[in-house]
Length: 192
Image 1 (cartoon, rainbow, N blue to C red):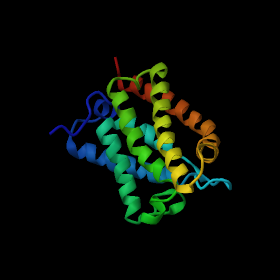
Image 2: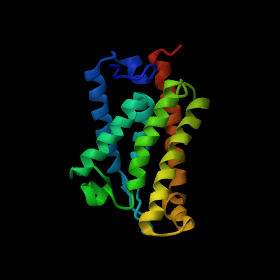
Image 3: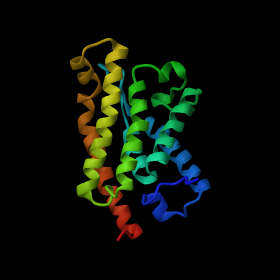
Image 4: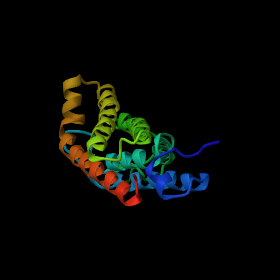
């Protein structure tokens, strides 16, 4: 059984072995947990500004669709069982199924989508990496804002104000950073 994605950064740098892939999946789950602790609470929304989305972008592009999604699924699972992996050191079922549930689900789907794009070499140049990471961010917003609307029992305008508008500038910076970092690492790794 193939446990790695062809033509992604992790398989370019490291041997293609199941144990290495599993270690990377765990590593990116832990990176996402650490990035969740980099946060700025906003008084008008239950959704804080965090570093998680940057970790999600990197996980998908570095690991590919299956392992990238697995890393985010593992991150959520570890938080669900009570480890303090969510923003602010939170964990457990009640927190995970609250207003930010959509974003968490979006992390898995976005990592898979970005991973698919990376498998198609869309992470090799800035011109292709930026749209790939923008697409991943859009997926996170789609799930996050959609669930925020349901959980807060509000209309789409209020959900957009609370779940998208305050985060756009920061997420564009994360997209720009990931969109320049990945092509640079590919260049160092010897992508032809």
